[in-house]
Length: 264
Image 1 (tube, helix red, strand yellow):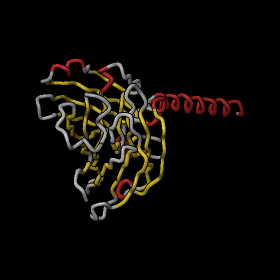
Image 2: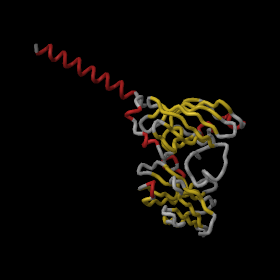
Image 3: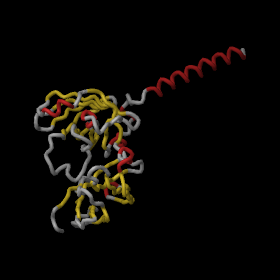
Image 4: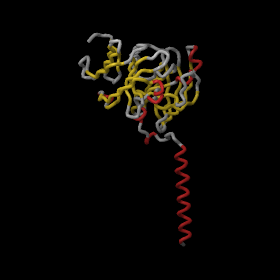
């Protein structure tokens, strides 16, 4: 009797091990009811084996909102520029495409369109700190987009680690920035043939949420001030470089910033 009981227990344990192993092999979700979509918002997603030298690896995207099964975002096919930044709403770049769609059983089916003749379909499958994306252009108006390969890619959050080898004179402070809540504001100089200063908002893991640009080659950021510059109840960002030039980034109601040339 005892041996029979042990045999049954062994079979049950074996079944549990096999079943658990099968589950661990699947890093992507297949049940939308168990997904916390807030983990995918306010991040820049880049291909996980991103290469500066390869044009096709310049695909990136940013998810603006996921509400009631509907998803909206921005897709970039021209570099790591699909992040919200001060120039995001300032220039009409053919490299940006809006996308929107619906989420069914944990997979987002979306269409993208830049309004200039470049259209396609993007499917997003949400995993553990990664997103599998299938991208297919249905229309390409501009010749340089032909170098962007359709295909299936694994995307990961754009992180300071991707830039660590080229970051110098880095400084970080923790700020409470309205709808962004508690974030880190990181200032640095991107080293290279033409070093330039920049600043990021990041979360506690170093994921880049936002970029502020102060692109003066050969300069560096000397001071950063967080204050309500235009007295609208929202905290703004002032960046000063060693050239003595001030850059004002005014926060909008949706949390994004725009660079102001006004003397306030």
